[in-house]
Length: 633
Image (cartoon, rainbow, N blue to C red; front, side, top):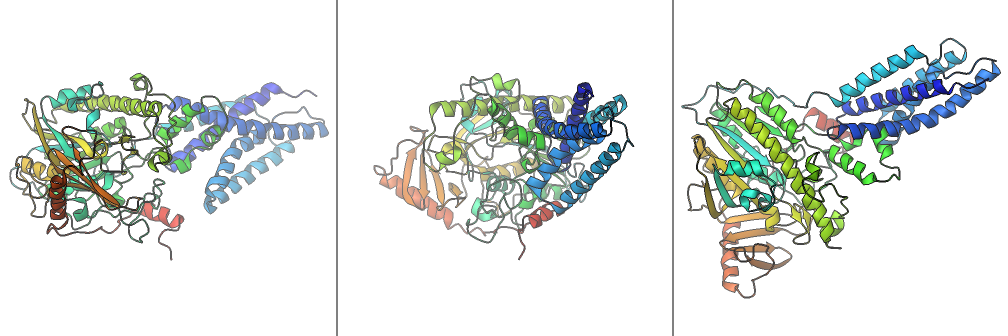
């Protein structure tokens, strides 16, 4: 008797498609979406599950062949062999990675069902894999794969609740508040960058007010966004890091979002946010946050937003089994697949997804004033510019070999070629983001939605590329991490303006309140940018965020003092030495003393410290925390 190879290959193809369909649907159900370069990733998924299916099917086909010979039948490939081969990789990945009782039980029931079909086929009750079986499997699998990739964009409560009451008084202009997460000012053309990273934003800035020297309140997302929303310094609003060994606060790891174990506290309920003040005056308020880590509603930044989208991206714990297998194989150019996966395993949305959600929310909102906050994460690590932007700069798609942990532990320095790969990828991602912003504004302008709107661009923090021995952010208070852009265009403004003095991130909220006619609360610590008389000194801070020391930056033009709790203060002349490479503390003791006095003034200010708020966790987050044992006694 001759084995039917054509039937075997057809069954193998169908099994691979079924396996990929079940695998991708299972992953998508648990929050993993193929978001970028979908065709290459899908091909790797098929390759990964195909390997397992081939091995399983070859073994089972041998058994089927032997049984057929014993019964003197023409050997064929039973349909159950196809189904069992398809289910095996998914069952293995569930058992190995998750060990969840419900999933294991469901997998066992499915396996028993397939085995029952196999037993019936051996007894001759069912036919082998024929054209009808194969066609049905292909059509169903293709539909399931397409559905798992093309699911609707996540957008929790996108429509949002109606405002609490009517518009109070004469409504002011609308507000479109945009934060370009992780964007350092010196990589923007309007701030002097030589590369053409932001051609659209540069053109926009020509008709707006550019604040050349805005300093962030800290160097990572949570405290800086809380400052932007409240006008309070980080120690006042309380949304910042706690001691890593303390029992208060939660980490991104506790929330099941990222591996970051630093403990942080949410924004206090007692803080008055810009969104709360505007909602009380009858504004429609919405936030669409690409960053679903520190902008998760678990950290209480959603106060006052009737609509708050903090949808996660793809959760790496639910990466499809085929992709998980394929990336472990010793294949050439494996790093390219790894970069695609690193990009796809993001806990945030991409710019085109933020834009699509913004369009949906803005549609038909012409009757009431609005405040729309948009957060973009496209220049956040891992830097992975999508095509065609990966060709924008020479090393934008080169292999990235920098060991971030070793560099940040000061075990080694960043090599020139490693920096080139990081910077080129970062800049190319910025070009992509700039293009998406151009698309957003073209559509909003065409609909007349920006005629009476204050438009504000800012960043929450910058990014270090080895300038002071660190990579990334939340590592220091040097300028690469805290000097961020601020560009504001008022309704009717056409002439550009540039402001060269140093300003603070806390100044944004009171400035916006004045522009919109909202009374500024007495507790606000920032200063309206229309005034040059400051309420408090310009100081930024970074606590023990996975470190053993605290740090402050104190500004008085042209000087900057960096104070660390474990080292002598360092002094830099930012006008003559913008790279902060020459410590002038020894030859300028009077300046050091003056800035230390300003630091004391800042630390002893009479503002009421609100402290961290209570974690407000949705049901999904609570279940995730229970699953990993957080909060159980």
